[in-house]
Each structure stands twice: as structure tokens, then as C-alpha cells.
Length: 551
Ligand code: NAD
Image (tube, rainbow, N blue to C red):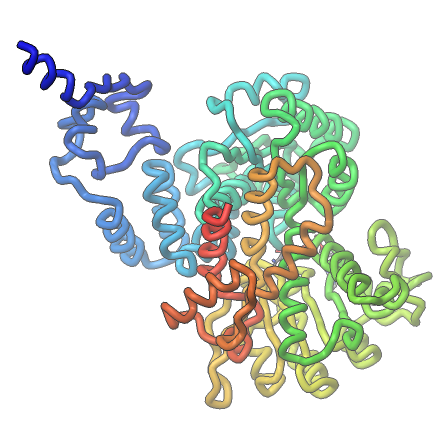
């Protein structure tokens, strides 16, 4: 008897299996919980899904293989985008596994340039709602709409009003593809849980006549709401977010029109946990590219003259951060400003410009110089060492521009940042060809490798994805309430340091780890020697995950 009692006492304790909150078909239909065919027999029985799927059990690796087989079957990237979005709607774990395992392949499909095409056709490809749509008609009830979102612990929101989608202009409600795509990268690249992320469209109408007549259009069919009403609506939205999710909820502004983007950044940056990726994220990525370029051109910042084609969110953001970097390197503000020139739709930005005044953020960069209308003539006059295109004017860096840059400098810096690819100032091939392979080139959208004069060149992609998922991760992990400019300058410097030469091993942990990855895989090579001023995208994922591990 005593023996029996002792053996009973030795038995493993029976842990009662908690009855899962969601079971059966509801579970299979929840993309956050669904694991496809990866459920074990025991899980299938406990969760009430036994028999609701084929009997085979396929682990995640096997399912990734199936996804990739399907991915390659499609003939174009828009179809691949639709397929991947359907996967995200079905099985988020698998979707993010695919994205993080195949970053270089997936990025151009779920992000620029394909996301631009997807936005243009958002009505056509719309299948299932993703994210929250709050319209100007909800003004006065924004908190009620926000309360319909079923998840309580949202930590990051990406919000747009669709007024300036990439370089494609006002796409109204079709712009929802952008917050959805950006937040996919929060998870796919930085490992932020998908249920902590919320994409939001503030639909205030559109001034795009084509869309207003488009039978497939899924947004409000009215012109954009006028100033004060619109401002009150955005104010109400910001307060509603804080009321429901707390003051440290990250709110990333995305693809707002130029006039609103700068205003909102100034208005909200001190009172809310917010940043504008088009201004600040772009700035960090572009400045990183410039800093890395200097390692190739062997010039210091003060030996450079920068000319921006475009003076909008991207250019002004880059110019301001560049100015910070210049000041940090010892220049005065005046010395820094002397080295930054801008051209907008009315020509060179100079004081007392006869073709129309200079207003807003541009005033800071207006030079004491004669007015010049054409970019080609500006280049002849000021002989910039670097030209940075962000005006969405395709072909602006024409043969003459590129040849003049090559004639003026041994290693000219050419950044064609406009997106999508169709809006790029020049292609990678044109840049290398017209500068005899001497330019340091980067673009906003990806370009394939170029062989010129028997040498291989890998154009870098100044992709904001190098920065915004990392900034979001840091902000959430460290509970940062106010996002300062210093964060973006530090990001830029770190990113520039990640561009590798095989022989350079820094002593910091992340760099050691990356060098280790480089040596073990032999995969990444000598970035700078190949002309690449950004590390391969897959390295940034390794780095984000490595940071998590260090923490
Ligand atoms: P924006 O609308 O704020 O600014 C556009 C600017 O271009 C304005 O200053 C306008 O005056 C100027 N412009 C228009 N026509 C011109 C012309 N013919 N000549 C000279 N300037 C002209 O837009 P933005 O947010 O600055 O974005 C511009 C482009 O940069 C877009 O294509 C966008 O996709 C791209 N972008 C790229 C990245 C990246 O590569 N990481 C990041 C952000 C934006």
C-alpha cells in the first residue's frame, strides 16, 4: 500500500490543458493563430481542428518550400504580391518566415516598387480588409471607430491619408497598401509582433479625378476635406490613439502631402511618440549612403557640395540631417549651408527668386546666388560633388548631367532616389555608362547588377527599410516617448558602418557578429569594392535579430 502511494506520488503531475480561447474553424481562420498543416495531431485534437485539414503534418520549413514553389510560378510581381497578401491573411507566421528567410527576393514585391503598382490597383486587388479605415465622416466619433479594433495591446501605428503615395501622387484610400507594407517590415525585418502593429487609413477624400470616376475605387468619393476640418480630424485621431493605447504608442506618419507632413511633424513631435518616415527615415538612409560614399571617394564631408533635385519631404529631410552631420564634423551652420544647394520645379532655390518666391522649409536653403532655371546649367555653375534626385521626375539625370558630373569629379556621387522605378532620375546602367563606371550610385528602387567595362557593379538601394523598423524596435523596446533627430543621425552613422569591407572588423558586438556571418557564409563580400554603399538587406535582418539577442 505504502509502495503504491509512493509510486503514485512519483508520477508526473497532470497539467490541465487550458481550453483555448479560439477553437475549430475560427482558429484556422485567424491568421495570427493559424499554422497551416504544421499543427501536430495532439494540437489538432485539443484545438478541435482534427479532420478539418488533410492528415499530413508539414513543418514550417516544408511549408516555406511550398510557398516558394508557388511564388516562382507567378509570371509578374503584382500577382506575387496578391499571392503573398493572401498568405498573410491566412497564416502570418508562415508569411513572416518567408519574408525574413528571403528578404532580398521579397522586399521588391511586398514593398517598393511593387507596392506602388499594388496601390494604383488597390480596388482591383482588394480581397479582405486589413487595418483600420477612419473617414472624415467619422469626425467626432474617431475613438468609437478605434475601439472597434479587436486588439488591446497595439504598440505601433503606421498612418497615411494617401495624399502623396511614393512618387505617384494622390491615391486617396488606395494608399492603404503603404501602411500595410511598412508594418509587414516591422515584423518581417525587426521581429515586432504583428498583433502589436496597426495600419490606419485616414480617408479624407481625394483630389484625384481619375479615382473619383474609377468604378473600382474603395474610398470616399469626395474631394479632400478642407484645412481646419482636416486638422481637427487629425488632432482627434492623435488623442484617440493615446486614449486607447497610451502615450508611448508609436505613430509613424507615411505619405502625407508635403504641406501637411512638415506641419504635423512639428506639431506633434514633442507631445506624441511620432516620426515621419518620408522626412526623417529617408534622411537617415540617404545620409548613411553619403557617409559610406565618402569611404569610396576618400573625401570628407566639408570637401563636398551637394545638389538636390527636388525640395520636398525627402530632400529637405536629408538636407537637414546632412547639416547636423556636417556640424557634428566641425563645420558651422553657415559653412554647412554653403555646401547644400537645391533645385525645385521653379529652378535653383535662391534668395529673391524672380520665378516665384521661396517659402516654408526651403527658405533655410535659399542661396545668395543668381537664379538658374535648368538643372544642367546649375551643375555647370556650381560643380556639385554629389547630386541627389528626389523630385519624381524620371530621366532628370540625363546623359549630359551624368557626363558633366564625371567631367567635374573623379568619383561623382549620384543618388537617384525617386520611387517607384519608373520615376527614377536615371537607371543604374545609365549612371555607370555615362560616368565611365566612376560614379558612386544608389537608388530608391532596386536595380540589378550592372557589368561595365568587364567590371561588376552592385547598385545600392537607399531603402528606408534599413532604418524605420530598427527605429520602431528601439522606440518600443526602450519605451521612448519623444523621438529626436539624434536617433536618426545615430542610425545613419551605424548603417554607414555596416557597409563592409571584408578586412574591416570593428570591435563592437554587432559588427563582430556581422563579420562572423560574412566569413562563415562567404556571402556578402566587399560591399564598397562592388560600389555598394548599403549592406545587403539580409544583413540588416541579421543585425536586428542580433540586437534582440544581445538585449
Ligand atoms: P514631395 O512631393 O514632398 O517633393 C517633390 C519635390 O520635387 C518638390 O519640392 C517639387 O517642387 C519638386 N519638383 C517637382 N517637379 C520638379 C522638377 N521638374 N524639377 C525639380 N524639382 C521638381 O515628394 P517627396 O516626399 O520629397 O518624394 C519625392 C520622391 O522621392 C518620390 O519619388 C519618393 O518616392 C522618393 N523618395 C525616396 C525615398 C528613398 O529612396 N528612400 C524616400 C522618400 C522619398
